[in-house]
Image 1 (cartoon, helix red, strand yellow):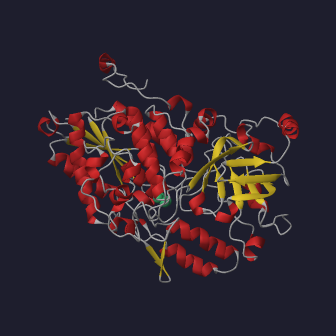
Image 2: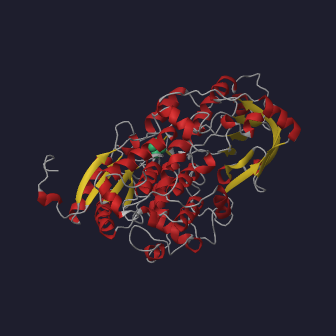
Image 3: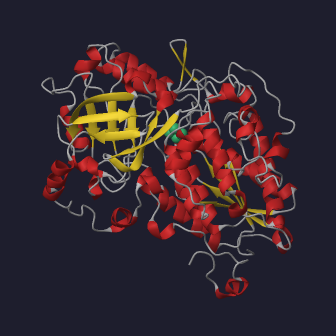
Length: 556
Ligand code: FES
């Protein structure tokens, strides 16, 4: 410490607060994090702590290939081991793109050192030709317009230039905004933090408050495992459903729960969906952006609306319960955040389906699907993998109609690998030109939180490990019945057995490095795609006080 230029006065006797910063120049959403970290630092110092900022891996949706999801677990390991290895008494987690927030929560949960999260906030809304855009949600529509010949490439270039007008994460309720919302639902940040716009000076102010609160957490020794309880996960899931959040959050919540030993299954999402309506009018399920949600009271106002559905005695990093935090919150603009009694959509916005096509489950975001397609039968059009899809989906000779069910395999955790956001399969151009805007699409992939359509996602087990998705053939009749929670292929068990016998085991595509580790040890989507060896609650110094002197403590 002295070699770094710190006198004893600076740190002796003070809680040491790590500022875990995912700032990176290759992650546009996190470009403002240096300023945010400075504000956190001021808060730590003001509260009598000693701040030390440290970098970790950062995961940017826009540039990273093949998919950031492939590296979420790697970043989580980086965060976990950095927190554990350095002498931090508490940590502030600065994250703000789709995977950085779950990776930080997973790592902090496993290290189980007192932690508070601070997300980066939504970017300013983009305006294009007088229309306010949701970056992803509108982009998908405009891409279809280009393919259908309704938009020129010159106009698309203008759109591209206008789409990201400020720092911050995607401004609709995509995965980043959903994860920020869930951080609040889990009780892991200060109330009201998630929706503050990235460029609003109130975000810098709350960053100071997070820094100061981290000092309090260090003194109180309030650990993530004491905050992220089964009740907290119920609250987070309820909030996810109330805002029409990203299906990606399902995978992340399952993984985070696994890290703190909370038994969470896909079925719990369905159970809570059956009682939780959509109360927030925000894209992609509604019309506004997160900035409007902030001005309507932010996530505390959403939680107030669904308070009867929450475990209000759950602990939070404020040191108070959810009920305490919500005591003074009042409802505001009902056109953005509706009361529970008059929601924008009824319960059932998410369905977990099972059947002979998805024995371990798959998910459908009903709130972003076409209602008339949620019960549908049609012949399968099968694509072996993404390469096959890209080669053939626009082939004028492809035998496909609006009733067809598009199937993509080899897009799951091991097959792709990394379970990319390929689940919103493109609609063949010849159908687009006929005015078709949605079809039933099924895959073992994920879907962007900004996307929409009748997409059955996260099919488990995936095709690459021999899941039934590997057995489907062109023309098989696929039956989706989301209200009845069913997803089946209407093929006899005898026929499926003979197809199964013909399946050749997939050769290992990755034999070295991280990709080899990933494909060997990643769990399926219904278990959160964590590594099998990272699941389970860590041991802490409190569990084994003597271990602190042995150098290695925690989950080793
Ligand atoms: Fe980073 Fe959307 S690309 S939040």
